[in-house]
Length: 342
Image (tube, rainbow, N blue to C red; front, side, top):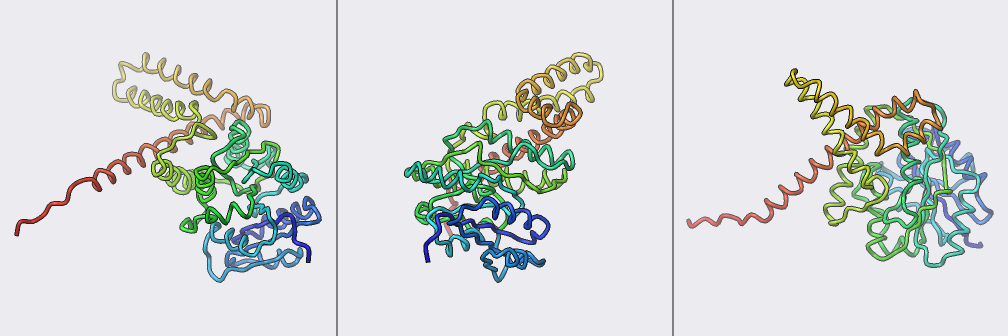
């Protein structure tokens, strides 16, 4: 049997609502020499049956292990030299897999590449649309030469994947396991490319509480810990200077609001200062707000401004908390142990 050129690995856990559209899109986009491996992470629904009905290889795990383990298990049985990772709630564009195959064929030194969500998510809640459009915009304005990786729609050479040890399976939930893999790839000197034209639509519907919980517990906190561990702070993606400045500015504005409550006599001056801060925040993110206005209109952009300010507030607060926590941990490790004289 001739080995395929691409192996598509899709980790899935109770994904019956989005998986059919995901697999149908992969089927339409797949070049002839492509194998598709659905890794069923011990689902309680008919995720596995959906894969079998569409003729893809289904690997069912005996117990829930998380996407990092599921992807590693899929790679272990993959036969192609290029492995493509696609999330079960992503509908890839019709040219996605051919773009991946062509890019790797043209550049033998390329280790990995990834794309982004598209700019036309299905209309849903304001939170969902904001979230998916934010992801698109951040990736579209990032540097093509990257030091991270994204497994929602990304690909890697099998030899490189094996050499760095695959995904870290200590991440038992969807988290930053792909970012951590990208950090190891970059540290080992491998080249990672962000292809802005490699796109897929995200089907996930976000709630506000779900977004905050995911951002704080599964993104900001572990990512900050990773950055502190490695001693790096890249100036790309959502860590560009304007994002850092915005994170500080939202707390300055919040502080001014608190001052107005504590000292009513200063409300006039404080109000002017707060208004200047809001304008500065809008200017720092003007490109993003123009993008939102073009896609969803002024009313949506106004609502998204509030969500964006909240995002900066809780993300920067989590970063600060983790830095303080890390500093205390290092201090305690350095403190000499007291030796009893008795």
